[in-house]
Picture 1 (cartoon, one colour):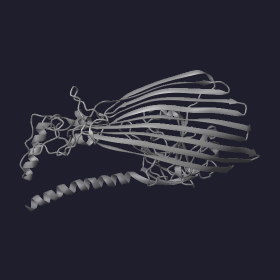
Picture 2 (cartoon, helix red, strand yellow):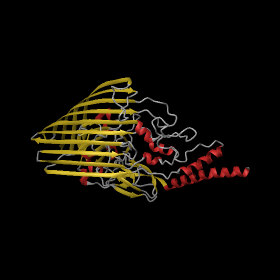
Picture 3 (tube, rainbow, N blue to C red):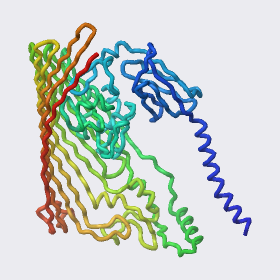
Picture 4 (cartoon, rainbow, N blue to C red):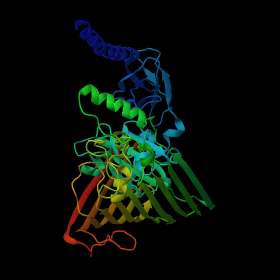
Length: 560
């Protein structure tokens, strides 16, 4: 008896000891690295991006150029900063690394879009990341947030994954408890960059990552600012660009036990526990991965026309994006159209940016990726004895907490549709080379439709009966923005003074109505439910309306 206990103790301790040794080995391979990043003149460079190459691990140097990071002793650190050449340095077991970055003269003259204006890279003192269009368009992504994954240090993207699902951007150092997204500014219009926005239209993205850079937008920029500049036409003949990208996607599959092996192991477990065996159905051999998973297909087709003359330009684009998910009943489709034009006559300039989009999402409830491993191979996909006709286990025969993914996809269908129009018109007056007045009017309207159909039937064991119902929601939002800004930018010998003053007015209106009807009628010819609100009973109706207005005054003074 004592020998048996001793053996059990040894078998329990050995895995823990092995895990502990692995942890020590990993800790020994990773070392803390610290140092300072300076320029050729020896001046510290603040806010330098430091990333461990090939991994998401990274950090940002402080205002004095000091940094600390933990990495493997043989890792490669990538140092990058606006206006300087990127350097890759091998750690080689060094605990201290002092890095000298070389200036990139051509990059220093590049123009970066900041709040209500532009600056040369060499004049930047804030933490700003710049992402170019060629980096974004190598990818097939649904949203702007997804396209930024891994392209900007200090910026992490969370969520997403399902077709059409919104991802969330988090900027290091600017997170708060609200878990809100950063403020989006598209061509001077404060708006959103959700799944309805076409990433192929992006020329560049500037991410304002610290309080100094985002301060011009006030409290709305508590989580940072993402400034998106869309493509414009260039002087020259008509240019036509066509791109078509397609890819197949799959989920990894596990080699699950089939019914004979599962029955043997299951019976052994029940026997060892002294419990009566389950009456397993040995005639069924279901691989639930085949039921829930499929080969996904992503397609992204884009066409654009651009051109212009000496004083005018135009850019027109159209896009179709489709994402057939790797899980059944998960799909996303988007059609978008854009027109950007501008013209200049003497001291006057005028232009507009217009985008129209329609997106549709087919969503699936539950978590099928987990459920396929909860369900047993002895459970049939269909079972006419169950409400709704689907199999999901039986007490004493196949006890499980899993949900039949095919059942919930059929019996609980959810669809979303969004149509959006957003755009702005601007006029500029430049009476002197150093003085510019700009009037910007922006308008955005969105129509949202949510439709849910619950058919009678069950998709999991011991599920309470629920009547059929349809839940429908209609919403409309409108945003109007009027901005007046005056920019003064002049050099006095070796002194450069830049002054911005302005006002912004924003009005938001949102209206929503919703209705629910239960005990829906069924078409006797097709067997389909009538999912309209004028049929059924037990009506529930609701709705609300909100209005808000924001008036802001802004100013910025810069001296160089």
